[in-house]
Amino acid sequence: MREVDCIIVGGGLAGLQAAIQLGRYSAHEVLVIDAGEGRSTLCRTYHNILGFPDGVSGEELRERGRMQAERTGVSFEKDRIVKAGRHGEKIQLFGTSGSEYRSKTVLLATGLTDRVPDIPGLTPTLGRTVYVCPDCDGYEIQDQRTVLLGSGEPGANMAMILIQRTNDLLYINHEQAPISAELHRSMKEAGVRYLEAAVQEVQQIEDGHITGVLTEDGQIFESERGFIAFGGNRVHYELAEQLGAVIADNKHVEADPRSLQAANNVWIAGDLGLHAEQATVAMGEGSIAAIWIHKALQQMTKGSR
Image (tube, rainbow, N blue to C red):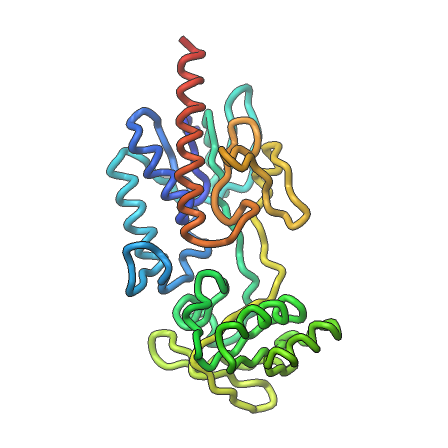
């Protein structure tokens, strides 16, 4: 069993930024536990992050962030935390490795997983020329021929956002889920082309650049950019719930808007929370949570004297 001052569950952008902030206090033993997955592992090029005008991949950011945190004394463990509880004043975490961890404080940066159907050719394009977030990457489809792959109303709602960026937008309802008459009418009036068809393949040239999609009936629809909106993303809220946090109807975790504390000695950051799901927001929240964790640990130290 390992016992530290703070455990950060999740080594994505929120968790790493928190680790850097906490490490720089030079006062706490900090452990990051990460399974090596998450949204940032899929994104090939973030273009909306300060200092990277030509883009930077999620993997590069994670590699740099870990190195930066390790320089301040933060340690890392590869494991997947599947259970959480309390033992006296300490928080207990249990990993699939069989290991048990205990900590005075915990930051949960477990994020969410996008629902991405197993369409051949889709994964290599994600974060390169096919996107999931209109706030992050709507700029990338400006005046570009764009295909949106989605399901029912989540896709239709995304189409209504994206049509503000390009007048050449095709929404393919891959799962042929129902859409209200009102949304159909809105899409038609806005100029969104609509098709109900299963996609057999996302076609691309080297390095993840989409060129079009092939539907099961043999039609090819050429495209320069793509988006996906299938709905049903899975929020990894379970650990927060086990530690006493309030879970919203959409399964995101509620927290104090100032400190991001979600339960006793438990903080959250990143896509786990109720806010815009952006990399830059996640990093900012990581820093905010870390500042308040530092304050809490200082109080614990004073109280033990």
